[in-house]
Image 1 (cartoon, rainbow, N blue to C red):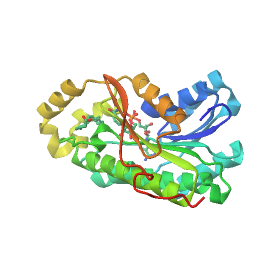
Image 2: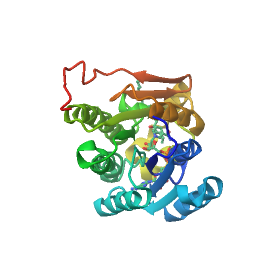
Image 3: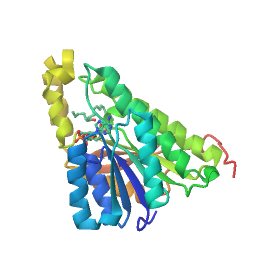
Image 4: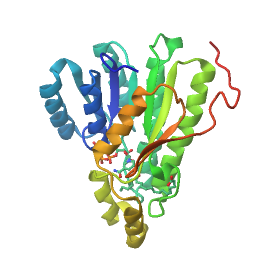
Length: 267
Ligand SMILES: NC(=O)C1=CN([C@@H]2O[C@H](COP(=O)(O)OP(=O)(O)OC[C@H]3O[C@@H](n4cnc5c(N)ncnc54)[C@H](O)[C@@H]3O)[C@@H](O)[C@H]2O)C=CC1
Ligand SMILES: CCCCCC(=O)/C=C/C=C\C/C=C\C/C=C\CCCC(=O)O
């Protein structure tokens, strides 16, 4: 998909990976609407992007992905201003094994809400232009991260939901591709939460497990994941596939496709 002139939404775009995804989309000539619950950080990131990429190309909405109303309004206002949506990246995520319901609300329900709202605007049967939805999972969506069982569950949920939606999109002829990104550890603010008792609760004492995992997988830079993201947005050939990002590089995980399961498109 050529990105120039396309319209993108990135949730959790104020910092970390979301900010990196937004920046590469802007560099490729897309218009980007950032949704984030952190107003101060969101405004600061938007101001920096406006300076570099122009005020007509960036929007920011204060939006908590757990709020259906805020999320719906932010999508609607983006469409009103930019004229449609072609790319959505459901990226907002947290780790909180104590308030684990909040983790499920943001990491899984937030991705489901974001995907359904994106589909409302993008699917061809509603007059949308089609496009791509990239849901940010984790390597912990493909294998267990023992100190964060609920985080792991949400990321497995993101992978399962996205695979099913990718096939539903083919069957229904929505014209929207869905992919998942599964990075190992990345140097962002999220990584610091691993040390915090209020976030990790009973699992905080298993610091040795974290140490073993961190030593085994290493730590990626945001730019490593951004490269994989850019490739995934541009490559239209792999609906329903996940991309793993490790320190060695990135590669597709091949799941059975809609075609393999003999799912036919309505159109
Ligand atoms: N950092 C890592 O090691 C890895 C991160 N991931 C995933 O990447 C995604 C982004 O993570 P990072 O950039 O590392 O985190 P981060 O903590 O640096 O950034 C997360 C952003 O999401 C926003 N956010 C949090 N709750 C929100 C809500 N309810 N509504 C809207 N925005 C909200 C925050 O304000 C922040 O701007 C997450 O889904 C995370 O699970 C996946 C694998 C590894
Ligand atoms: C606080 C940041 C840590 C959590 C962020 C995150 O999502 C990082 C995950 C890192 C590693 C993944 C954890 C478990 C993976 C277990 C097995 C993977 C098997 C699959 C494979 O290696 O291909």
